[in-house]
Image (cartoon, rainbow over all chains, first blue to last red; front, side):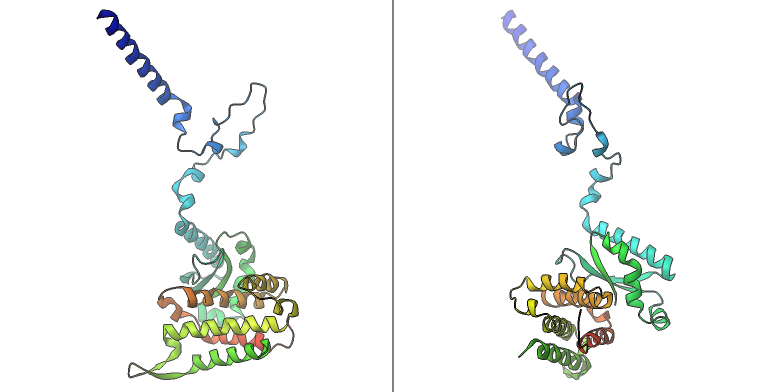
Length: 149
Length: 129
């Protein structure tokens, strides 16, 4: 009876040690990070050079925002709006994405604050908008064109 | 009917719908103020451009299938004519809204006179390259 109790005690103790070790393991800490992104994923041999640059220092890429498409679109619109403000000294008051979700990249339709005034002051304000924002649109993930409402 | 005739007729039809007033629900209404007619107008203006481009490109005109819209887009991009490209992308997006999206009152904010001018300036061209 005493020997049996001793065996049970050893079993409980070893289970507790294994569980504690698992909880304290670095692999447990990064369990929510995809394996291929984890710096602990593959341990290199002692003489192997490892470039850790692929591990982004910012937590941005791991945050929920990277999959929040509506939020990212708003951020892109905000960037375009800042550029419009710096060039034309006006701001977007209304926007519309008619083909939202149906094309890989869509046209962003906007209305700016003093639109009529800007249209009458230039030959083609809509074209000016596009030409001035062409670089931003080329690097944009969601919009390939800008047009006026 | 050839592509050029189709382009002209789609453009004329869209223009006439845009300018037409009629009686809907016993009220005199401008058709362009009605979302349903906006769908028709956007769609016909897009197809006016579509057939205009095909009329000026024998290689594309000989092809068929739904992928032609995408091929055409790539081709328009190579013309190095930003206004042409802008107008085509605009109408392409509006046509997709017209055919595939549910009700959306924002469509009524689109300036149809500007679109009419944009499309007509392309329709009346003798060459596109």
